[in-house]
Length: 191
Image (tube, rainbow, N blue to C red; front, side):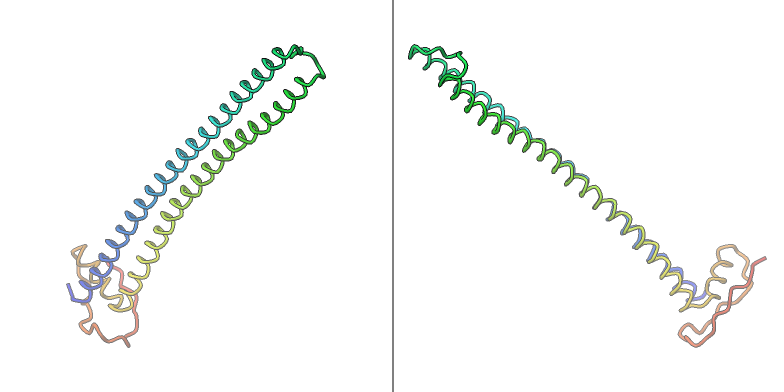
């Protein structure tokens, strides 16, 4: 086997090892993005639960306010359940404010969940893009390596490498490795 053949095979093998490392690195990066996506979902659930708890506390507060208003009205000899009276107007206003506050808490809960899911989708997409980019880079790198080896060492290096691996040498490899002015000849068919 000539030195040109050895160098061509070594060049391609080195590129193959490098592309395998790139693919493993991309898969590790995807796993990292997947873990970040899960963390974003969990954080979104935690935030949503905080908003839900906030809404529940506001409902408990309005219950206390309504109970206090009813007790005050009854203590002052006013019918607390009559329609159109001062206690009714105060309770209606208090309920309106409480419903607004509760609705805001519920909407915040929904937005926190949706934003967490969007963030998680972005992380998942970034992981997929990392793997696709690594695959494209690996194919490109292998193609460049093969093309460079063919251009530098000539087609005869591949023909002799093929015959070396198959056991039937039909052509002698070129001994002038650095002569870049040689024309490329297609490898001869091995019969």
